[in-house]
Image (cartoon, each protein chain N blue to C red):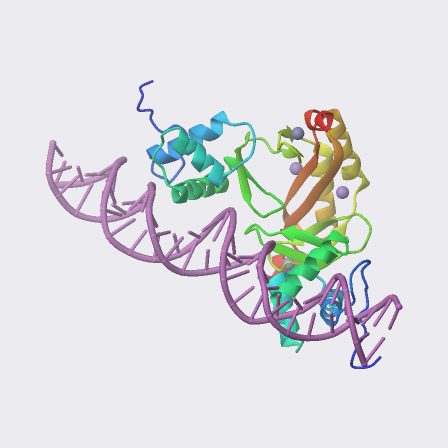
Length: 140
Length: 140
DNA sequence: GCGGTGGTGACAGGGATTTTCACCACCATC
DNA sequence: GATGGTGGTGAAAATCCCTGTCACCACCGC
Ligand SMILES: [Mn+2]
Ligand SMILES: [Mn+2]
Ligand SMILES: [Zn+2]
Ligand SMILES: [Zn+2]
């Protein structure tokens, strides 16, 4: 692998560029949710020449392609994280931001049933659990 | 009841004012989620002298006091609705915005269990279901 | 290699919310 | 029923995240 790494996760219909590769690679290395601005800052810190606009656009494509999860903070800011492809939800630490991906057939069924009972179709849902993780409650 | 109605839902630690009463009363009369700006517009239409800033501040207090539910639209805008005091979630129509309050002990238990299994404490959660309501799917 | 077409990024909006700050109105007290 | 202190108000300015614009650039099929 040379210093000039080739774009990795190429997206259908989109051209492979150094910038998109950089965003994608960075997401691979991170565990928790980050805002577009944080990701941009980190990329600049690492010496990547990339504009904030491009980071925003790339994250949007990745979100549409289902390659990243998007959450909204209480303040309305969008935060992103590379996600595994199977459907899942998040358990997020309020203090340190650590997140755990969780699944639950029970919730899935419940959501579908409740929607059907009320005559709703084309159903989707968001489920997020918040709490204080073990580390953070130890420290207080 | 005179034309000069007294403030109704007084909040602890906060002074009772005509403006706060107006916001609270309007929320009582509405069924679905509205943005701060929509609420402000409606208040002005009704002849209430009230500033947008005050609407924002009042909604914040009400949200902190747990008297209104807050959701975020996809565009990041905050929308508010007076909520019943018991814990519940929402089933929201993507097209017309109609919302149904729903409950489910199954989800509650699931969320608590998942959090506990991962060592999280002080747990809360958000659950929203989205779909197309009967009215709206009929019209398409 | 060339050309066309998609991508980039500095900059200028947009839109929602928050901050500022001078003024105002509750309300406990005199 | 005046007065003073303090919380509340609101117009305007400032923020903040994000999206649109547009001149320029770089993939990539030929
Ligand atoms: Mn689910
Ligand atoms: Mn619940
Ligand atoms: Zn934590
Ligand atoms: Zn509908």
